[in-house]
Structures are given as C-alpha cells and as structure tokens.
Length: 413
Image (tube, rainbow, N blue to C red; front, side, top):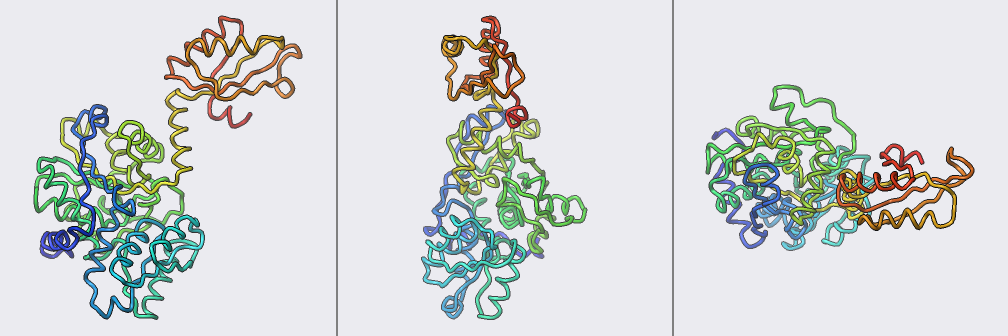
C-alpha cells in the first residue's frame, strides 16, 4: 500500500515523537459489556487524555512537524470541540500561537474552555463549513499553518498510535471498532493495525444521520450534507476527507451505522456498568457492538472510546431517560375517591412494596373525572418493570384504578 498517504513507518515515527507528551491510555477489560455481547471486550480509554479526547495525538504530531519559522507565526484550526482543545493545549505547551475558528453558535462553555488553554477564538460562519472557509482564508492572509482535523498525513499518523498501543497490550485482538467522522482516526488505526496484524478486522462506526464514509465504502455518492442534530456531534462530518477516503477504501473492512437510540443506550450502559463517561461519538463503537452482538460473539473486540466531553446536563437527561426506558423511573396515574386519608393509603402501598415516591401531583379540576374523585400522578423510583407491575396490581386490588403513563401521555398532561 505504498501509494497511500500514510504508512506504518509514519505511525511509528509519530509514536516515538508523542512518547511522554501524550498519555499512553489504558486498554481495559469490560466484563459487563463482554457478558452482554458474548465476546471479550476491551476498551481503549482515550477519555483520559488531558483534554478528554484522542484528538491530542494528531494535533501534537502535526505541530511537531512545523519549522521554527512556522512555529513563530502560529497555527490556525477550525473546530467547535475536541480538535480545538487538542490544538490549543499542545500549542501552548510548545509556545506556538494558536487561533481557533468556531461557528457563531458555539456554546460559551466550549469557547471559554478553548480560550483557557491559551488559544485565540474567532467566531465566524453559521456552521463548520463556513468556519473552515474562514480559517483557511485567515491562514492564507496571515501565513498561519492550517491544522486540519483529519485530512492531513501527520494528523492521521498521530491518531494511528492508538492502534500501536492497543496491539502492544493485546496482540490477539480480532476486531477493532472505531468511530468515524472525517476518517482521520480510522485511517491511522487501519494503517497500523493491518501492518501489525494483517488478519484483524477494522470496522468503522458512523451516526446513521451522517453516513458519508459508509456510503463511500459501498460505492455510493456520500450524499447531500445533513444539518440534523445528533448525539454523536464529534463524528457529525458532512464529507469524508480526500486522503482518509483513500485509506478507508484500501484497508477498512466495513463501516456500519448506529441510530440515536443506540448511541444513547451505549452512553448510558458505559456510565452504569463500566463507570465510564463517554460522549455520544466516543460511545459509537459500543453502540455498534450492542446493535449486532451476534457479529462479534466469541471474538476479542477492541473498542476506542474516543472522547468523554459530554455536557453534564445532557448526560443527566440521558441517564434519566435510560431509567424511564428500563422501568426504573415511572409515572403512575391512579384514580381515587376524594376523601381524607386516601393519599396516605396510596403512598403506603407504594412504599410498602419498595417504591420510592419522588413527586406527587394531586389533580381535581382539570381531568375528566367525577366531582367526587381525583386523579393522582406519582413519579416513582422502582427496581424494574416487574416491580412496576407489582405496584400497579396492588393499587388496583386496593380499589385505586392505576395505569402506567407513556412518554407521549406524560408530555401531554
């Protein structure tokens, strides 16, 4: 594969250059995931990097290629997230001036975080495409080096060091599951993995809303750019790179897609069963494993957790939705006579069966019930769906008609 833009020698040189400057993250066994999927799962924890993402590897490797004159003038990058922080963090370490162009709608927390790492932030454009154009124009105008997030040989080689580490720790891996956006990460990993273990299967994972690399691998046009919001915003890339597509077509075995529900469940499962925080894009490999467990049964599967930079409010909401889906946090609606002591009886039944009442809403006026009766909405923490059924059965037996409210009903009331 000498015609490819990056080779194993480039990745090895990157590994030597990054040693001691980028964390050599652990590859850990994931027993809960292994039991669920019927295979041996190992997680590469790039979430532990100082900026919370693998992006540091490619960014630093690119910065180390700069001449003294280029370092003095500085670099510029386009990003609204992990790449911005990776460039800013290592540029400050090396004393290189860094400018990051972000879209106008970028959350203030991301702007503040990037500025705190020493970079100058410029807000331009309505989206990443506009921001990239602005960054390239500024680079040309001021002689700055543009640090591409994925379509650069040095960046690709830097990301490939992940595979060097994974296969050094577990040379017997059968499969690697790798999130794919523009393709820089999977390109570097595929180059290294196929050179070290030619029979290993390298599988990319994309958001179903942004399947451009999968379509390319299938011989189809990447399709029209999408502007749809996805939990996996870190891989919501509208167009694969020109260099990365060459590597993917030559070395990657397959690219699969996962939907939003599968991404949510992967983030939730990692938090609950493995005690690991991952962003949506970072958990894409786990989502693919859970979506097709039969594909990986009995095999040794390495999954790259690419990043852990998820908004705390989003994570909290996601975990609560998981509790609702699992029947561990429910809303019950009971009809009861409007008499003294009845509310106490209802709470006694629920509490006596081990349910924890979190919120109560007693409604007399706005529901279609008899003037002598009331409706009670109760938010309850439960063990599982069987536990919910037991509570509902007990309430009905006590003379309080009760039903489980669905998500749609709950939103309408």
